[in-house]
Length: 292
Image 1 (cartoon, rainbow, N blue to C red):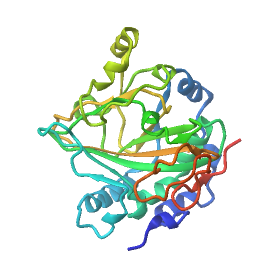
Image 2 (image 1 turned 90 degrees about the vertical axis):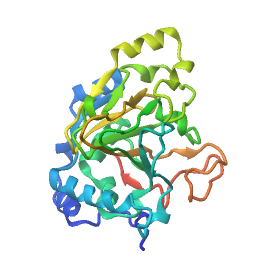
Image 3 (image 1 turned 180 degrees about the horizontal axis):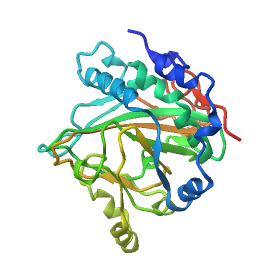
């Protein structure tokens, strides 16, 4: 089976059609949206793909979650249930862009790339890795409060960005994303178990920081819409006890020029780099040269 990480361009007719004669400036965030990101640590409600594309993604998702899929060996990580609670289920994986075409092509979506470059200060956007987080109806598990960069310190400098997009409508009932506004200014915290105790991060917080959780913001999104957040943004999602699934994909990127910070492997199955080596090549393609 072809490893799509070797293909650094859109391959589906849907994405190629979007890119044809594309007005990239039409996808720019407003000054108010960019200001909100820098002030609060996130900006949400960004339309990324239409319902037809969501349908294609759901079809691909239904195929790749099967461990018998012929491309299964291409996942960097695959957890059919990463939850530490045996009564809950949290499917979590990395690397599906290598396996199926519509997830692959999300990386080249101008509706994603233009805002990403803006929020990275106009710099070139380079791919880091993708993720799937799926919570089944009635017994979906939590994603504990955390900061993304606390898991990414093997890369430097910190010039990263996360985009979260629902494959289902996401709300408080089925375990939508939650943010602590302004928490991106807290500095780097220790990392909790990602699918463990929802409040595992609390042991690393001051009393004042813990009080700010009273102002947590539920990010309710229609399917196909996304939210961008800062690498130090404290975020998480509660369990899904509704009768609806909550499936989501995540695209993680960093500004061009990001380097390896240690001899630690960057991702399972990716050859390690020496500290100071730039992240590029097959697994970390440049997606967009920058918007300024």
